Length: 149
Image (cartoon, one colour):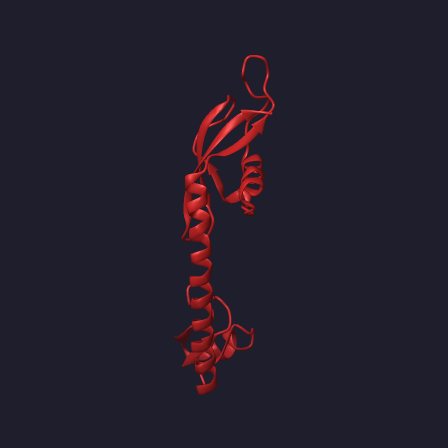
């Protein structure tokens, strides 16, 4: 039996995908819980149209992300930190501080959980690198400089 998935189902398929499953699985699990509908002609057309819309949206998002990636690659972000007399930072620079600096510099919101600082602990002034995940397929290496506030 073929069904059109209304949402992502683990180990089965993505939203708007037409998949072939056993009739009992479709009747007893997928359809009653709202995960799928039977693959009628109307449902097939809906699935195809939904896939086209998703693809167009992805292409538009990728073009926007490419401009952001170009900006991030070509500019060094400055992160301010409080410094003692010996040049050591009080505490260390965190991904939250880096996310705030990126937001101030480029007006781009980046989730701090999607930033990976490539160094261990940043406790002195200097230049460093971090890996920023903007999308599941788009990652960019960002250079940043820790400066005294």
